[in-house]
Structures are given as C-alpha cells and as structure tokens.
Length: 109
Length: 170
Image (cartoon, rainbow over all chains, first blue to last red; front, top):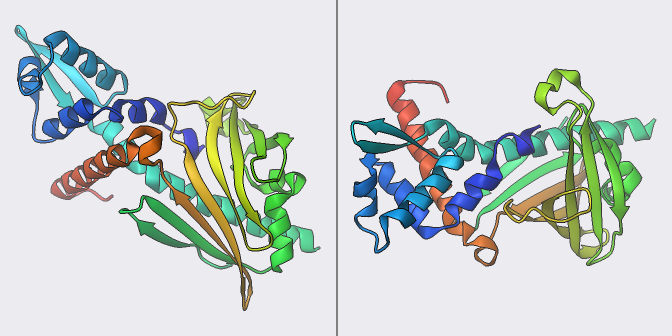
C-alpha cells in the first residue's frame, strides 16, 4: 500500500530539526567522522551524537567504525524512499481515480 | 478513460491531480460525500475500507480503517491502517476541503506523520465532471516541515543526479 510503504514518520521527525537538516546537507558532499560533523555546532559532542542517533534510527545515515573513528555517511536507500514519497502519493491518487471511474460506471448499470 | 493531469507546484508545496469522469456532477459529488459510496472505491486495491465515524459537516470528520485482504500483498496482509479526514469547508456542489491525518482506531492523530490539507473541487466538463484534487503538504505551523520538505526534495535531486551518473533508468 503506497501511503505507508516506508517509515515516513521517523524521516519527517528527523527532518523537523534544523541541526539535523544541516548535518544531512553537509553529508551530501561526502562522508565525515563524528568530530568533523560536530565542529561547526555550538553544542556538546553528546548532543551531536544524539542527533546522529535519531538520523540513524530513521535510516537516513549510516555509521561505521574505521579504527578509532566513527565514519558517518548518507544512506541512499532511505533517501530514495523519501524522495519517492511524492511519486507514490501521485500513484495513490492515480489508482484512486481509476477506482472511482469504475465505481461510477458500475453504479450506472 | 480520461487521463490524470498532474500539476506540481514545489514553491507552494502543492500537488494537484485532475481527471474528468463521465458522470454528472451530482453523481460524482455523492460518491465523495456519502460514506457508503466512498467506502466502495476509496481504499487501495485489495483493501477493505470500513467507515467508523462520519459527519460530513465543517468541523465534522470521517474516521475509517482499511484492512488488507489480499495475501499477495505479503506484509500488509491482515493489517489495518486508520486515517481521519477532518472537514474544513463544504460548498455543495463545488468543493470541499479537509485535513488528512494518520490515526489509530480511536482517531487519535499520529503527530509524527505529516498532515496534509486537501481540497476536492468539482467542475462541469463537456464529457461529464472534472475533479480537481489539490494537496498542500505540511506547513510551517505544523512542523517547520516546509524546509524539511525542501531537504527531501534536495536529496531527491541528488539521488537523480547519482542515477544519471550511474546511467541507470529512473
């Protein structure tokens, strides 16, 4: 069912915060480690980690360990799904109109 | 069968879908505004729509559950999803508007989900009736999501470019 086909709720929740949006747009340019991500923000590393955790739970980013560092990168799958939302919404209305057409035809008989 | 026309207005976060139906306007209007009729076509294919509450007046609402009865839809099979339309304006037989919510079975909105503002307009057309469905995606008041949507779109564009680079079909 197209309307609910991916966890839109957590994605929207994640994107509601300006810091998290900023992190995502910076990650579009390439992967960063956690301290690089935290650098421009006037907040503790713990606070930044909290934001990263929310983004990770929404599957918008992915963390992996490289030696002592944690490397963060965008997760294209979830990104694609988010972008697909509008396409799916269009498809939902397309199908819904088809069913209305059939319904109106059947009722004529 | 007529085709659906899609109008995208990214700046105003609006998606408009239009289609002409070969039936008189009063007939099409009642398909949208009568719970029994609506339930017959509203839900996706393979899903049964059950109307739990219906009050077609401004401020009134439609609360409905949709249950998947199609085993081929795998993880959705047997699941019920609830949604609520809260009617805002009703101008028979020209248009009505509502706010669309994802809810639980008691009609309590899921605040994490985007709520969309939808207007359905009906116009006489030579072939019958033109239905114009206009969705305004979440506004600043709701979540500051206009910007969030911008990010989603930006990310989508990035993805499109990536696909171009990889030479894949969209």
